[in-house]
Image (cartoon, rainbow, N blue to C red; front, top):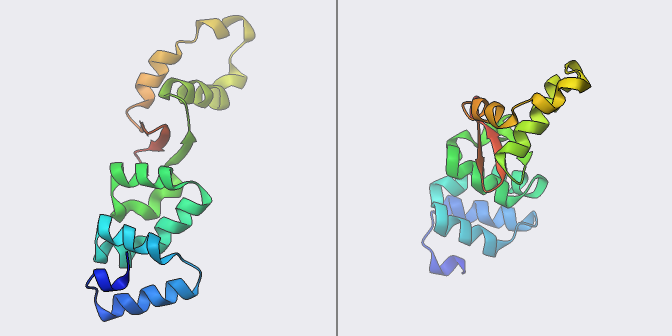
Length: 135
């Protein structure tokens, strides 16, 4: 898609030109604008790309699907990693926080499924990415 296929404000066109000069890809820019709109592009595109490049675009897409672009500033606070399932996240979380307190003799009695259910009040998983809801 090219700039001539989309009617954009002059200020947005100038912003795009500056981004392209700074090595942003114009095709990606126009895909973003078509999916999310011009106003969202102007407000959030640079943060979206920064997070996408440093973590992953799938992760930032999952975050936006749950919390919206308005909360993109909180991504770093909310992001808790990529996990195969929520139970794996809960087990790792438990072991990092409490593992040193649990004697080896009783480790097999820990109910990670129940712990995961408790964590679900404050955390969620979307497309294998876990986010804290209480950022």
